[in-house]
Every structure is written in structure tokens, then in C-alpha cells.
Image (cartoon, rainbow, N blue to C red; front, top):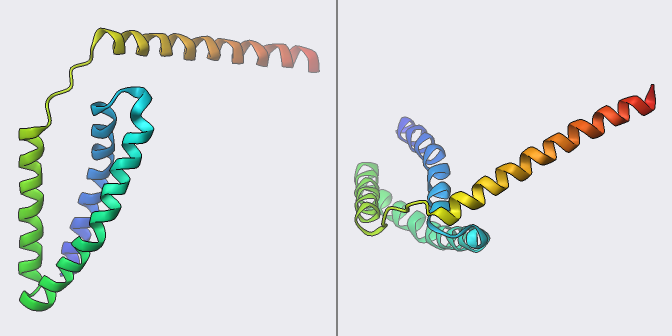
Amino acid sequence: MWILFLIYGIYFGLAEGAEKALVADLVKPEQRGTAYGLYNLAFGITVLPASLLMGALWNLRGPRTAFLVSARARGSAALLLVMLVRRHATGKREKREFNEYQLQVNKNRGRTAQSRRDCCRLTR
């Protein structure tokens, strides 16, 4: 039985990053903070009832039934995700924003390197 908990823990650890990346992909960059907040709110609200249901199923029908119901719920959620979430195509505006961001990062790296060189000259 403990192996099932280990497998679920590994799954959860792998899936959480993908879920958060999906949230980021589905909203505009300026709305990401709100989107992450709503995602975590929904996650937090559903964890307690899900845990209570899992415990009740475990006590009433045993661990096998509890895990099978959980697996079916996850499968249904995955199917709904594929059917309902449209594919997000990166638009020209987003590509331009990303390129501008990259240019700014590269500029800042250059300034940092230059300031390091200036600092070293001053200390010698």
C-alpha cells in the first residue's frame, strides 16, 4: 500500500510544475499573479473535500476502491482538459514582448559585467 503513496507523491511532484506552466500559458503576462492566486485558491478549496472523500471511501470500501475512484476522477479531469482548453498560440505581440525582455536582460548582463570590471579597476 505504501508504494501507492510513493507513486502518487512522484506523480504530484511531476504534475504540479506542468499545471502551473499551463496556468501561465493560458493568461496574459500581466494577469499571471491573479491567475496563480485563483489556481491556488481553487486547489486549496478542493483539497479538503477530496481528502474527506478519499478517507470515507477508504473506510467504507477499502483502499483499492479509494484509489480506483481517484484514478477515474484524474482521468476524467484529463479528458475534460483536452476537450475544453483551447490550444494557446503565441501571438506576434507576445513574441515581440519576449524579444524585448530578452534584449533588456542581455543589456543588464552587459552593465553588470562592465560594473564588475570598473569595480576591479578601482580596487587595484
